[in-house]
Length: 347
Image (cartoon, rainbow, N blue to C red; front, side, top):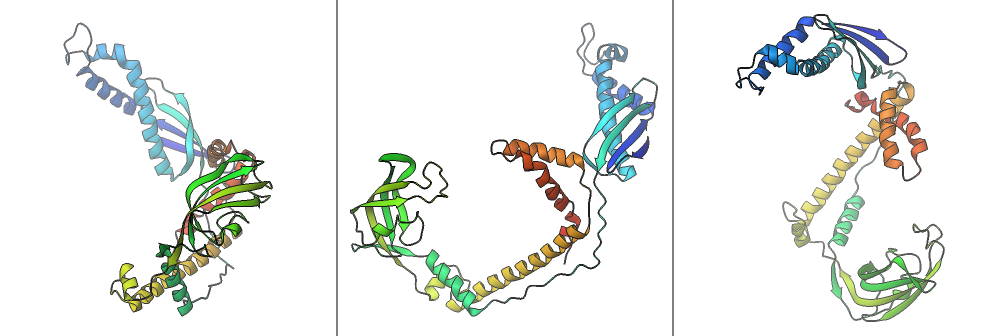
């Protein structure tokens, strides 16, 4: 097999490949012989069909199959010999497929750009930070919060209580979609609902009925409700107060701390925070290096990849009006990905 590469503009290449006729002929005869062993042709016993008869009936189809297989096999071999890395699927043009003549074809494609990194003048700033006792305390406080137990009370609701409520919302005295729920859990004072919703629930008790008047924010996610006044009919099903666990050895054991002590919990929390801090510092340094390399090194992006990704994103975004921005996004996206040699380096 012989191959010749022609450099066109930019990243475009054309490769001419010539395959000896013997390669096609030998593979063709091999497949015809295999087919003769299992072909069912009227007038012949299975396995006794002459190859000449098989060629007459199946020769054209077998030859087309051989040409296709040999083409892709030799194309991959040619890419390897020429040290080429095509971006996308090549366009193939058959030049000569005559019997007893060299099989010739041309492949047109783009290649990935060669990334030559200029690291001169690049500087990075290493973030400086440390894990303090307060950080450990804050994490343990969050763990306590996550392990809160709730105890039902008969008193009026206070900030931090957990309410179970049913509610119905109305705009212009008409119920609106998404404005109703049953057995909804609301931590009072947590800002979970729109402004004004929780205000009238302070002091409410189990089985109370509460009417709340609110106005939806102008930037509310549902356009049909944005900026409109509404009222909610609320039924209080349950009021529960939080019971935070004590920070002691039992708390540490419940969290699965290896030695079952509060000292062990603090140690594990600190170790986890330090690992996370080290990782974030490493990631920040790496991010600075990659950004500097991208800024200081221009790389041509294969149009083939841009078009392919544009088609995919156009399909993805066709219903939300973002199609016009696809190719602009892609150039930055692909340019960054072409820096994968940098991203895989250890710093």
